[in-house]
Image 1: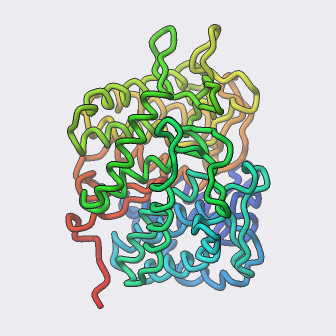
Image 2: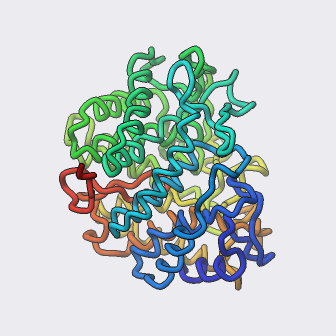
Length: 454
Protein backbone atom coordinates (compact mmCIF):
# COMPACT_ATOMS: atom_id res chain seq x y z
CA UNK A 1 0.00 0.00 0.00
CA UNK A 2 2.74 2.43 0.97
CA UNK A 3 4.77 1.65 -2.13
CA UNK A 4 1.68 2.20 -4.30
CA UNK A 5 1.00 5.58 -2.64
CA UNK A 6 4.65 6.66 -2.83
CA UNK A 7 5.43 5.46 -6.36
CA UNK A 8 2.46 7.32 -7.79
CA UNK A 9 3.34 10.48 -5.91
CA UNK A 10 6.84 10.18 -7.42
CA UNK A 11 5.39 9.56 -10.87
CA UNK A 12 2.82 12.34 -10.99
CA UNK A 13 3.58 14.96 -8.32
CA UNK A 14 7.27 14.64 -7.38
CA UNK A 15 8.46 17.63 -5.34
CA UNK A 16 4.96 19.08 -5.09
CA UNK A 17 3.04 18.84 -1.84
CA UNK A 18 0.44 16.18 -2.50
CA UNK A 19 -0.87 13.92 -5.26
CA UNK A 20 -4.25 14.00 -6.98
CA UNK A 21 -4.40 10.29 -7.89
CA UNK A 22 -7.38 10.42 -10.26
CA UNK A 23 -6.26 13.55 -12.12
CA UNK A 24 -2.67 12.21 -12.02
CA UNK A 25 -1.23 15.59 -11.10
CA UNK A 26 -0.16 17.64 -8.10
CA UNK A 27 -2.69 18.87 -5.57
CA UNK A 28 -2.06 22.62 -5.44
CA UNK A 29 -4.85 23.29 -2.95
CA UNK A 30 -3.09 21.61 -0.02
CA UNK A 31 -2.57 23.50 3.25
CA UNK A 32 0.91 24.40 1.99
CA UNK A 33 -0.44 25.72 -1.29
CA UNK A 34 1.17 25.42 -4.69
CA UNK A 35 4.79 25.93 -3.58
CA UNK A 36 7.01 22.91 -4.26
CA UNK A 37 7.76 22.08 -0.64
CA UNK A 38 7.73 18.29 -1.02
CA UNK A 39 5.22 17.84 1.80
CA UNK A 40 4.52 14.19 0.99
CA UNK A 41 8.28 13.50 0.93
CA UNK A 42 9.06 15.10 4.29
CA UNK A 43 5.93 13.74 5.97
CA UNK A 44 6.27 10.21 4.59
CA UNK A 45 10.02 9.68 4.73
CA UNK A 46 10.26 8.12 8.20
CA UNK A 47 7.48 5.68 7.26
CA UNK A 48 9.58 4.52 4.29
CA UNK A 49 12.59 4.05 6.59
CA UNK A 50 10.62 2.11 9.22
CA UNK A 51 9.20 -0.17 6.51
CA UNK A 52 12.65 -0.84 5.06
CA UNK A 53 11.92 0.93 1.75
CA UNK A 54 15.49 2.19 1.61
CA UNK A 55 15.74 3.05 -2.09
CA UNK A 56 12.65 5.21 -1.79
CA UNK A 57 14.03 6.74 1.41
CA UNK A 58 17.29 7.69 -0.35
CA UNK A 59 15.32 9.21 -3.22
CA UNK A 60 13.39 11.39 -0.73
CA UNK A 61 16.51 12.32 1.22
CA UNK A 62 18.21 13.55 -1.95
CA UNK A 63 15.22 15.72 -2.84
CA UNK A 64 15.22 17.32 0.63
CA UNK A 65 18.99 17.93 0.60
CA UNK A 66 18.84 19.53 -2.85
CA UNK A 67 15.48 21.26 -3.04
CA UNK A 68 14.12 22.12 0.41
CA UNK A 69 15.78 25.53 0.69
CA UNK A 70 15.41 29.27 0.06
CA UNK A 71 12.28 29.34 2.20
CA UNK A 72 12.74 33.07 2.73
CA UNK A 73 11.82 33.56 -0.93
CA UNK A 74 8.30 32.21 -0.42
CA UNK A 75 5.87 35.09 0.04
CA UNK A 76 3.00 33.14 1.58
CA UNK A 77 1.43 32.47 4.97
CA UNK A 78 2.12 29.09 6.54
CA UNK A 79 0.56 27.45 9.57
CA UNK A 80 3.04 27.39 12.45
CA UNK A 81 1.34 24.25 13.79
CA UNK A 82 1.23 22.30 10.52
CA UNK A 83 4.78 23.30 9.57
CA UNK A 84 6.00 22.17 12.96
CA UNK A 85 4.26 18.79 13.17
CA UNK A 86 4.84 17.77 9.54
CA UNK A 87 8.16 19.37 8.55
CA UNK A 88 10.06 19.91 11.80
CA UNK A 89 8.71 16.67 13.29
CA UNK A 90 9.30 14.58 10.18
CA UNK A 91 12.85 15.86 9.72
CA UNK A 92 13.75 15.35 13.39
CA UNK A 93 12.55 11.74 13.26
CA UNK A 94 14.67 11.08 10.18
CA UNK A 95 17.64 12.63 11.99
CA UNK A 96 17.18 10.45 15.06
CA UNK A 97 16.71 7.27 12.99
CA UNK A 98 19.73 7.87 10.74
CA UNK A 99 22.06 10.34 12.46
CA UNK A 100 22.20 12.26 9.17
CA UNK A 101 22.77 15.87 10.27
CA UNK A 102 21.26 17.23 7.05
CA UNK A 103 17.83 16.40 8.50
CA UNK A 104 18.59 18.18 11.78
CA UNK A 105 19.90 21.26 10.01
CA UNK A 106 16.83 21.48 7.74
CA UNK A 107 14.56 21.10 10.78
CA UNK A 108 16.33 24.00 12.48
CA UNK A 109 16.24 26.13 9.34
CA UNK A 110 12.48 25.67 9.04
CA UNK A 111 11.81 26.13 12.77
CA UNK A 112 13.68 29.45 12.67
CA UNK A 113 11.19 30.62 10.03
CA UNK A 114 8.43 30.07 12.61
CA UNK A 115 10.01 32.19 15.35
CA UNK A 116 8.59 35.59 14.24
CA UNK A 117 5.10 34.26 15.05
CA UNK A 118 6.10 34.29 18.74
CA UNK A 119 6.61 38.07 18.75
CA UNK A 120 3.38 38.77 20.66
CA UNK A 121 2.82 40.45 24.04
CA UNK A 122 2.30 37.08 25.75
CA UNK A 123 4.67 34.87 23.74
CA UNK A 124 1.67 32.82 22.58
CA UNK A 125 2.37 32.54 18.83
CA UNK A 126 0.07 33.65 16.06
CA UNK A 127 -1.25 30.87 13.83
CA UNK A 128 0.22 32.00 10.50
CA UNK A 129 3.63 33.33 9.53
CA UNK A 130 4.95 34.63 6.21
CA UNK A 131 8.32 33.02 5.45
CA UNK A 132 9.47 36.00 3.38
CA UNK A 133 8.36 38.97 5.49
CA UNK A 134 8.15 37.37 8.92
CA UNK A 135 4.72 38.95 9.40
CA UNK A 136 2.35 36.83 11.45
CA UNK A 137 -1.38 36.86 12.14
CA UNK A 138 -4.24 34.75 13.40
CA UNK A 139 -7.11 33.27 11.41
CA UNK A 140 -9.91 35.71 10.70
CA UNK A 141 -12.51 33.23 11.94
CA UNK A 142 -10.90 32.51 15.31
CA UNK A 143 -12.73 34.16 18.23
CA UNK A 144 -11.64 37.81 18.20
CA UNK A 145 -8.08 37.34 16.98
CA UNK A 146 -7.34 34.36 19.20
CA UNK A 147 -4.70 31.69 18.81
CA UNK A 148 -5.89 28.09 18.91
CA UNK A 149 -5.14 25.75 21.81
CA UNK A 150 -4.41 22.67 19.68
CA UNK A 151 -1.97 24.73 17.58
CA UNK A 152 0.16 26.67 20.07
CA UNK A 153 -0.12 23.74 22.49
CA UNK A 154 1.39 21.31 19.98
CA UNK A 155 4.95 22.57 19.63
CA UNK A 156 6.56 21.25 22.79
CA UNK A 157 7.93 17.87 21.65
CA UNK A 158 9.58 19.18 18.50
CA UNK A 159 10.92 22.44 19.94
CA UNK A 160 12.35 20.78 23.08
CA UNK A 161 14.05 18.07 21.07
CA UNK A 162 15.33 20.59 18.52
CA UNK A 163 17.02 22.59 21.29
CA UNK A 164 18.65 19.41 22.60
CA UNK A 165 20.03 18.29 19.24
CA UNK A 166 21.18 21.74 18.05
CA UNK A 167 22.33 23.24 21.34
CA UNK A 168 20.19 26.30 20.52
CA UNK A 169 18.03 27.08 23.58
CA UNK A 170 15.65 29.47 21.81
CA UNK A 171 13.18 26.77 20.76
CA UNK A 172 12.73 25.36 24.25
CA UNK A 173 12.41 28.89 25.65
CA UNK A 174 9.46 29.53 23.33
CA UNK A 175 7.52 26.46 24.46
CA UNK A 176 8.40 27.00 28.12
CA UNK A 177 6.82 30.46 27.86
CA UNK A 178 3.63 28.92 26.43
CA UNK A 179 3.58 26.39 29.28
CA UNK A 180 3.95 29.15 31.87
CA UNK A 181 1.13 31.22 30.39
CA UNK A 182 -1.19 28.19 30.44
CA UNK A 183 -0.17 27.18 33.97
CA UNK A 184 -1.14 30.60 35.27
CA UNK A 185 -4.51 30.85 33.54
CA UNK A 186 -7.80 30.23 35.30
CA UNK A 187 -9.31 27.03 33.91
CA UNK A 188 -13.11 27.01 33.79
CA UNK A 189 -14.12 23.68 35.42
CA UNK A 190 -10.47 22.64 35.13
CA UNK A 191 -10.79 22.69 31.32
CA UNK A 192 -8.83 24.60 28.71
CA UNK A 193 -10.91 26.61 26.20
CA UNK A 194 -9.92 26.32 22.53
CA UNK A 195 -9.15 30.03 22.06
CA UNK A 196 -6.59 32.29 23.75
CA UNK A 197 -5.89 35.88 22.76
CA UNK A 198 -2.11 36.32 22.30
CA UNK A 199 -2.33 40.09 22.91
CA UNK A 200 -4.35 40.11 26.13
CA UNK A 201 -3.54 36.65 27.48
CA UNK A 202 -7.25 36.04 28.05
CA UNK A 203 -9.40 33.14 26.88
CA UNK A 204 -11.63 33.75 23.87
CA UNK A 205 -14.98 32.01 23.48
CA UNK A 206 -15.58 29.28 26.04
CA UNK A 207 -15.46 26.35 23.65
CA UNK A 208 -13.85 23.11 24.82
CA UNK A 209 -13.16 20.09 22.65
CA UNK A 210 -11.22 16.84 22.43
CA UNK A 211 -11.52 17.16 18.65
CA UNK A 212 -10.44 19.92 16.29
CA UNK A 213 -9.04 23.03 18.05
CA UNK A 214 -8.27 21.23 21.34
CA UNK A 215 -7.10 17.67 20.71
CA UNK A 216 -3.32 17.61 20.44
CA UNK A 217 -2.72 20.06 23.31
CA UNK A 218 -3.78 17.34 25.77
CA UNK A 219 -1.70 14.80 23.86
CA UNK A 220 1.47 16.89 24.17
CA UNK A 221 1.08 17.32 27.95
CA UNK A 222 1.34 13.56 28.42
CA UNK A 223 3.96 13.11 25.75
CA UNK A 224 6.23 15.92 27.01
CA UNK A 225 6.43 13.97 30.28
CA UNK A 226 7.16 10.71 28.44
CA UNK A 227 9.76 12.40 26.20
CA UNK A 228 11.57 13.75 29.28
CA UNK A 229 11.94 10.19 30.65
CA UNK A 230 9.16 11.13 33.09
CA UNK A 231 11.15 14.03 34.57
CA UNK A 232 8.81 16.83 33.41
CA UNK A 233 6.45 16.40 36.36
CA UNK A 234 4.60 19.64 35.65
CA UNK A 235 3.47 18.26 32.28
CA UNK A 236 2.15 15.05 33.79
CA UNK A 237 0.30 16.95 36.53
CA UNK A 238 -1.29 19.25 33.94
CA UNK A 239 -2.29 16.21 31.88
CA UNK A 240 -3.81 14.34 34.83
CA UNK A 241 -5.75 17.38 36.02
CA UNK A 242 -6.98 18.20 32.53
CA UNK A 243 -8.04 14.64 31.71
CA UNK A 244 -9.82 14.37 35.03
CA UNK A 245 -11.86 17.44 34.05
CA UNK A 246 -12.43 16.14 30.51
CA UNK A 247 -13.68 12.76 31.75
CA UNK A 248 -15.85 14.45 34.38
CA UNK A 249 -17.43 17.15 32.20
CA UNK A 250 -17.23 15.94 28.59
CA UNK A 251 -17.61 12.16 28.67
CA UNK A 252 -21.11 10.85 27.94
CA UNK A 253 -22.60 7.44 27.34
CA UNK A 254 -25.34 7.04 24.73
CA UNK A 255 -28.60 5.18 25.26
CA UNK A 256 -27.10 2.02 23.79
CA UNK A 257 -23.93 2.31 25.87
CA UNK A 258 -21.49 4.04 23.49
CA UNK A 259 -19.00 6.32 25.25
CA UNK A 260 -18.13 9.58 23.53
CA UNK A 261 -16.65 13.01 24.25
CA UNK A 262 -19.04 15.92 23.79
CA UNK A 263 -18.02 19.45 22.93
CA UNK A 264 -18.84 22.29 25.32
CA UNK A 265 -19.87 25.72 24.05
CA UNK A 266 -20.36 27.98 27.05
CA UNK A 267 -22.80 25.94 29.12
CA UNK A 268 -24.23 24.08 26.13
CA UNK A 269 -23.27 20.46 25.50
CA UNK A 270 -22.92 19.44 21.84
CA UNK A 271 -23.41 15.72 21.34
CA UNK A 272 -20.97 15.41 18.48
CA UNK A 273 -17.54 13.86 18.21
CA UNK A 274 -14.89 14.52 15.57
CA UNK A 275 -12.96 11.74 13.87
CA UNK A 276 -9.95 13.73 15.14
CA UNK A 277 -11.08 13.09 18.74
CA UNK A 278 -10.83 9.33 18.17
CA UNK A 279 -7.11 9.61 18.93
CA UNK A 280 -8.11 10.06 22.59
CA UNK A 281 -8.61 6.32 23.09
CA UNK A 282 -4.92 5.74 22.43
CA UNK A 283 -3.96 8.76 24.52
CA UNK A 284 -5.91 7.67 27.60
CA UNK A 285 -4.51 4.15 27.34
CA UNK A 286 -0.95 5.48 27.06
CA UNK A 287 -1.51 7.76 30.04
CA UNK A 288 -2.92 4.95 32.16
CA UNK A 289 -0.19 2.50 31.14
CA UNK A 290 2.73 4.84 31.87
CA UNK A 291 1.65 5.82 35.38
CA UNK A 292 -0.54 3.63 37.53
CA UNK A 293 -2.75 5.73 39.80
CA UNK A 294 -6.30 5.86 41.12
CA UNK A 295 -7.81 6.72 37.73
CA UNK A 296 -5.75 4.34 35.55
CA UNK A 297 -8.38 1.60 35.51
CA UNK A 298 -11.13 4.10 34.69
CA UNK A 299 -9.03 5.64 31.91
CA UNK A 300 -8.30 2.26 30.30
CA UNK A 301 -12.03 1.56 30.42
CA UNK A 302 -12.78 4.92 28.76
CA UNK A 303 -10.01 4.32 26.20
CA UNK A 304 -11.56 1.01 25.20
CA UNK A 305 -15.01 2.61 25.18
CA UNK A 306 -13.89 5.41 22.86
CA UNK A 307 -12.16 2.90 20.56
CA UNK A 308 -15.37 0.91 20.41
CA UNK A 309 -17.46 4.01 19.61
CA UNK A 310 -15.07 5.08 16.86
CA UNK A 311 -15.15 1.54 15.47
CA UNK A 312 -18.95 1.78 15.47
CA UNK A 313 -18.72 5.04 13.50
CA UNK A 314 -16.89 2.99 10.84
CA UNK A 315 -19.17 -0.06 10.96
CA UNK A 316 -22.33 2.04 10.62
CA UNK A 317 -21.31 3.32 7.17
CA UNK A 318 -21.66 1.67 3.78
CA UNK A 319 -17.92 1.70 3.08
CA UNK A 320 -16.76 0.73 6.61
CA UNK A 321 -14.67 3.89 6.96
CA UNK A 322 -15.79 6.61 9.34
CA UNK A 323 -17.13 10.12 8.76
CA UNK A 324 -15.32 13.36 9.62
CA UNK A 325 -17.60 13.82 12.63
CA UNK A 326 -20.62 12.05 14.04
CA UNK A 327 -23.60 12.86 16.22
CA UNK A 328 -25.55 11.33 19.06
CA UNK A 329 -29.28 12.11 19.11
CA UNK A 330 -32.36 10.21 20.18
CA UNK A 331 -32.66 8.94 16.62
CA UNK A 332 -29.05 8.15 15.64
CA UNK A 333 -25.80 7.22 17.32
CA UNK A 334 -22.26 7.54 15.93
CA UNK A 335 -23.51 8.73 12.53
CA UNK A 336 -22.94 11.91 10.56
CA UNK A 337 -26.11 13.83 9.73
CA UNK A 338 -24.87 16.83 7.75
CA UNK A 339 -23.55 16.37 4.23
CA UNK A 340 -20.30 18.16 5.03
CA UNK A 341 -19.55 15.74 7.89
CA UNK A 342 -19.91 12.58 5.78
CA UNK A 343 -16.50 12.55 4.11
CA UNK A 344 -13.44 10.42 4.90
CA UNK A 345 -10.07 11.89 3.93
CA UNK A 346 -7.76 8.96 4.77
CA UNK A 347 -7.53 10.09 8.39
CA UNK A 348 -5.44 8.06 10.89
CA UNK A 349 -6.91 8.71 14.35
CA UNK A 350 -9.05 5.58 14.66
CA UNK A 351 -6.23 3.31 13.47
CA UNK A 352 -3.83 5.17 15.78
CA UNK A 353 -6.05 4.23 18.73
CA UNK A 354 -6.22 0.59 17.56
CA UNK A 355 -2.40 0.61 17.44
CA UNK A 356 -2.00 1.85 21.03
CA UNK A 357 -4.68 -0.45 22.39
CA UNK A 358 -3.18 -3.45 20.61
CA UNK A 359 0.27 -2.72 22.03
CA UNK A 360 -1.04 -2.01 25.51
CA UNK A 361 -3.78 -4.66 25.90
CA UNK A 362 -2.97 -7.32 23.27
CA UNK A 363 -6.68 -7.74 22.57
CA UNK A 364 -6.88 -9.37 19.12
CA UNK A 365 -9.96 -7.36 18.15
CA UNK A 366 -7.82 -4.26 17.55
CA UNK A 367 -5.83 -6.07 14.88
CA UNK A 368 -9.06 -7.44 13.42
CA UNK A 369 -10.56 -3.96 13.26
CA UNK A 370 -7.36 -2.64 11.69
CA UNK A 371 -7.52 -5.35 9.04
CA UNK A 372 -11.14 -4.41 8.30
CA UNK A 373 -9.92 -0.84 7.70
CA UNK A 374 -7.18 -2.11 5.35
CA UNK A 375 -9.78 -3.95 3.28
CA UNK A 376 -12.08 -0.92 3.19
CA UNK A 377 -9.20 1.34 2.11
CA UNK A 378 -8.25 -1.10 -0.64
CA UNK A 379 -11.82 -1.40 -1.85
CA UNK A 380 -12.94 2.23 -1.74
CA UNK A 381 -9.86 4.48 -1.64
CA UNK A 382 -7.29 2.73 -3.83
CA UNK A 383 -7.10 3.85 -7.44
CA UNK A 384 -4.67 2.81 -10.16
CA UNK A 385 -2.55 5.87 -9.31
CA UNK A 386 -2.63 6.18 -5.54
CA UNK A 387 -5.20 6.58 -2.76
CA UNK A 388 -8.03 9.08 -2.46
CA UNK A 389 -10.50 10.24 0.16
CA UNK A 390 -14.24 9.80 -0.36
CA UNK A 391 -17.07 12.32 -0.10
CA UNK A 392 -19.88 10.27 1.44
CA UNK A 393 -19.21 7.18 3.53
CA UNK A 394 -22.93 6.32 3.53
CA UNK A 395 -23.02 5.52 -0.19
CA UNK A 396 -22.05 2.18 -1.73
CA UNK A 397 -20.02 3.77 -4.51
CA UNK A 398 -19.10 7.21 -3.21
CA UNK A 399 -17.56 10.07 -5.17
CA UNK A 400 -13.80 10.29 -4.61
CA UNK A 401 -12.19 13.56 -3.54
CA UNK A 402 -9.04 13.02 -5.63
CA UNK A 403 -6.52 13.90 -2.88
CA UNK A 404 -3.85 11.66 -1.35
CA UNK A 405 -3.22 13.50 1.92
CA UNK A 406 0.39 13.58 3.15
CA UNK A 407 -0.73 12.17 6.51
CA UNK A 408 -1.94 9.01 4.77
CA UNK A 409 1.69 7.87 4.39
CA UNK A 410 2.94 9.68 7.52
CA UNK A 411 0.31 8.28 9.87
CA UNK A 412 -2.46 6.03 8.54
CA UNK A 413 -0.15 3.56 6.78
CA UNK A 414 2.52 3.80 9.49
CA UNK A 415 0.10 2.96 12.29
CA UNK A 416 -1.39 0.13 10.23
CA UNK A 417 2.09 -1.32 9.61
CA UNK A 418 3.04 -1.00 13.29
CA UNK A 419 -0.27 -2.54 14.38
CA UNK A 420 0.81 -5.76 12.63
CA UNK A 421 4.51 -5.50 13.58
CA UNK A 422 6.44 -6.70 16.59
CA UNK A 423 6.32 -4.46 19.69
CA UNK A 424 10.07 -3.91 19.43
CA UNK A 425 9.66 -1.94 16.18
CA UNK A 426 9.62 1.71 17.33
CA UNK A 427 8.92 0.51 20.88
CA UNK A 428 6.68 2.68 23.05
CA UNK A 429 9.34 2.31 25.76
CA UNK A 430 11.87 4.22 23.65
CA UNK A 431 9.86 6.47 21.33
CA UNK A 432 7.01 8.95 21.62
CA UNK A 433 4.95 9.85 18.56
CA UNK A 434 4.28 13.44 17.65
CA UNK A 435 0.74 14.28 16.55
CA UNK A 436 1.66 13.62 12.89
CA UNK A 437 2.85 10.08 13.66
CA UNK A 438 6.55 11.00 13.71
CA UNK A 439 8.33 9.05 16.49
CA UNK A 440 10.78 11.08 18.56
CA UNK A 441 13.29 9.40 20.91
CA UNK A 442 12.80 9.41 24.68
CA UNK A 443 15.61 11.22 26.48
CA UNK A 444 17.98 9.13 28.56
CA UNK A 445 16.34 5.89 27.40
CA UNK A 446 16.83 5.82 23.65
CA UNK A 447 20.39 5.78 22.24
CA UNK A 448 19.05 7.52 19.12
CA UNK A 449 18.36 10.73 21.09
CA UNK A 450 21.62 12.20 19.71
CA UNK A 451 21.91 15.17 22.07
CA UNK A 452 24.19 17.99 20.90
CA UNK A 453 27.73 17.69 22.26
CA UNK A 454 29.32 21.15 22.66
